[in-house]
Length: 249
Picture (tube, rainbow, N blue to C red):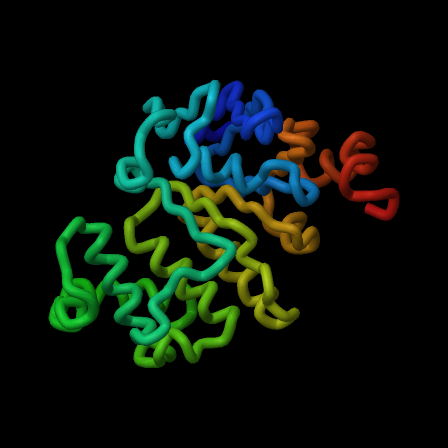
């Protein structure tokens, strides 16, 4: 069994009287794609925000690669190898795809820069950007303005930017959201490839993608993990069927 890269224990967060995460235990192992699923309002985004450092938990611990990161800010978690890609793309639409990734490379190196001119002049950043764009299948679109890319291409571009920091764990928030069948299939293929070299915690509503990609699945309902196991185990779990997947799962 692979070692645990991310270990969450007793994680809790409330907003007023609403308990959004309520004693969550979760583990992501080195080399696995671990999917987090659950109905709307289950607390998935809050949980990922707690892992990324954007939301401070009220209780519980988060350990990454053996270190306690529960109270670390976002940038220090990123330096340790945690990288998050959001449901809503966060690219610079007026810059080219290559410039967007070069800026992410420079930010990961913690260099100061003034928008695009230094990025264009940084040969090392440009070379790394080219490699990352090729890794996500966008080599032919390097010179295209990011704002003109298709929705699926923008999602792939955001993944290239997330990879700029050489993460050990990718936190992906609904990468298939808003994509059509062809783009969704392309994203599944891309995530399969990335999963060979990165651990991934995947939040996704596309169940076909989840059951194809995930090594293990955790099901979050009302702030609690009600099941965790292989896709076959989760598909057969009576509590999961009742709470989320439905009788036709």
